[in-house]
Structure formats: C-alpha cells, structure tokens
Length: 249
View (cartoon, rainbow, N blue to C red):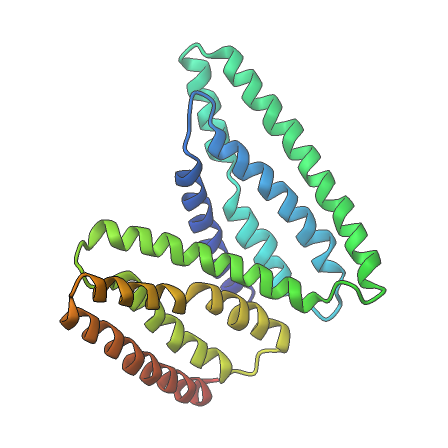
C-alpha cells in the first residue's frame, strides 16, 4: 500500500510539474523551474507540519503527498542541469541569480509553510480548520490539473469535432468513483479521492458547454452522440464500478 501511494501521487506530481512548466514557460532565467520548486517547498512544509499533526490521517497518505506528490512535483536534477547550461554558455550572472533565488526563495517559502501550518494547527485546535475541507481542496486541485493536462494532450493528438477529451475523462471518472465508493476506505480518503479528486477531474459544466457549441454549429448528429453517449455510458460505467468495487474490495 505504501509503494502504491508513492507511485500514484508521484505520477500526479510529475503531471502537475509538466503542466505548470508549460504554462509558465522558460526564458533566459528558468522561471518555470524556479516557481515550481518554490511552490513545492511551501507545500512540503505544510504536508510534514500541518497534515502530519492529524493523528487520524494515515501515514501512507502523508508519505504519498510528501514523498510522492511534492517530491515528484519539484525537481533538483532540472535545476542542476539548467545551471550547468547557463555556466557552460557563459551566462554566469544569470546562473548566480538563479541559484540565489532558488535557495533563498525555497528557504523563505518553506519557512512560510511552517509558520502558516503552526497557525492552522492552533486554529484547528479550536475547531476553526476542519481537515475535511483541506482534503477536498487538495484532491480537487490535483484532479483539475490532471484533467487539464490530459485534455491538452488529447486535443493535440486527436483533432475531431467530437469532444473526445471530456468524453473519456468523464467516462473514466464515473467508473473510478463507482469503484471508490464501494471500497472500505475511510472518510478522509473518500473526501480526498472522491469529492476532491474525482470531482475536480470530471466536469459537467464543460460537457454542457460543448453541447451548446455543437448545437450552435448545427452539428446535431455529433451532439446526439456526445450527449446521449456520455449520459448512457457514464451511468453504465458507474454501475459497473460499484459492482466491481464491491466484489474486489
């Protein structure tokens, strides 16, 4: 189970890093890696200080988030190679600035994470910061990133009128949520993976917007196949997930 959590969250962290790196882009100074590593330092501090303070939270989950997700999200090897390229190409000043910003920025970011975690722990002891909300938030953000990354990759590979990316994302999410709800996982796992991740991964609003666009473009046949196929197959796969999950788990 420990290695499974590391593998799953590690994959999600790598996807998040890839997506954010493409979104930010890189210039003479590698802003994308700099921002990613600074964000990661903050998040890891929150995981090991705030989340680890909850006794009812599985150690496997903490390791998955810290070692898997955040460890895979940040990257020291890319940081090293980028500095090596800057130095070998004669951009010594840029390399020095990049190193200093990374070290100082990462240190301050981690410090802020610990400081905010201490504040949250103090407020949580008074019942002002339920862990359930944090689990839903973490899961939702990861699910949304995975949906965006998968949708972007799919649209680059498959260029057809039929909304393939949203179609298969909703199919996969419906099946996986069905399986998840049939397991004996604790309530926090259900909130993290079900309400959070699956809720952020699948999308009803995009589904409806794409239906409107197909209607406006008078693509009635595609509209019928997409709307009807999505509703029928998603419900069918959700039932299959519920049955399969109950038998396997």
